[in-house]
Image 1 (cartoon, chains in turn orange, brown):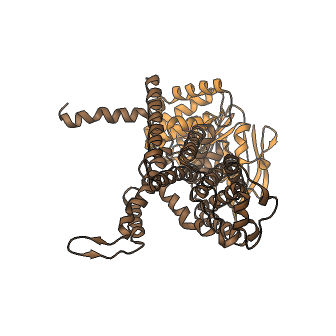
Image 2 (image 1 turned 120 degrees about the vertical axis):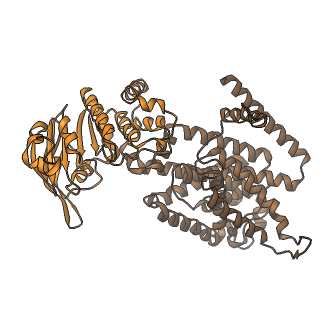
Image 3 (image 1 turned 45 degrees about the vertical axis):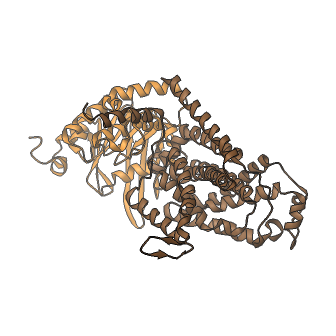
Length: 238
Length: 350
């Protein structure tokens, strides 16, 4: 579905990505794990066109993404849940969700998706008329995901959804991500929380300083000695 | 319930019309002039609020747009004899010198030309953000003023225009203020309005939702300028005279004060504060006259009013940063809630 080949991105003279290749297959959960500065967010930013790569190619369903503007991506079925949620703080929950469906014109389908989002996140339904800025961090993350789902994405990309959330909320959130995946949405998940991410992933990529150093299924990576040392802590999976 | 609200709305509209009718026949011309100014400030405030409050573009070019509208309307509506009298240094270029339009088409033309000016300035300037946009638009406003000062054969230059027909009356100004309000409400509640607000809140997230940033910014800018042009046209034909010095930065600043006081992003707030600001500007005039405080007599200092006015502005910005309304709007529900709450306050325990 999404194919990245030999992607090199440089900020000034510094190469943030030194030629990475990865593939996202349809109906899978793919996760990209790495420490700060590994280049995870840069990868996402180049997919959505916020940074221009120096070389390499990004293809989505056979189409070259590099020539497509950010605002048109959502029409192709790619939606990003940005890092730090970025909900529209002074707008109500309902307005936020409606904005998610901004490019769509099929009122009936929109209504259906709205009901689906409310079913996934009942908390949002209780707070329809509240402004997004007054929600808690976890609720804002739910809203950001709900808003992204309103655009009916084929590929949903999430940039560190667990950032700054309590462990119990993270657990809940990952259950919901699994639920969304069951509805046929392909997911590209970027995480520092390697343990949680690898548990739900079909395929995982480990990134270090601009390169992909390891790939494998989520299970394989979870038991991999190097991954354990670097990301999970030795004692987690004894 | 919905029916009841519609009835309330109809009653309020009727009351406003009744008030205007009474005002028109019983107020003196000074008071009527102030009422007219209030309504014009509503138009100007709403147009600036669309750009600055709803779309979050910090633009300070409003005086320039108003100048375009005011001059266009004035030149198009002036009788031929008045044109000859005005342009005694350099005659007005043809075909404008033999052309007299009715007021409404002239106003709309003023708005359209102002919108065209906004389009031309917006194409490069709207790529800028925040303070940089403010500086660019401020510069644009000054450019317009200098152009007007120097285009002698078109605008009569620094001499300005006199004996413009005083077409603007209460019905024109309040009619157009009402029309502007309705159009703004419809626009803000449409999907365009949601896109404007999304851009104000977070550009990156908005773009991810598929919103074309440039197109929507331009749309808000052009529509805002259109109504600023109309407001300028109303103002010119109310005062009967326009000259380049009217459209200095301070004029933009007055409108900015209206929307800051009312609340950036609130139509209700803008309307309320347009009245408050315009009327208080007049009420505070007593400060310019000598004041006898009993123990001390302050001699009349012209400009004292502006000092107090500026102090009020500072107080507003320090203590009421959200303005009167914040981003909230008027609704009958909140009024009813307010009325219902009042008896409990008086009655005490409940």
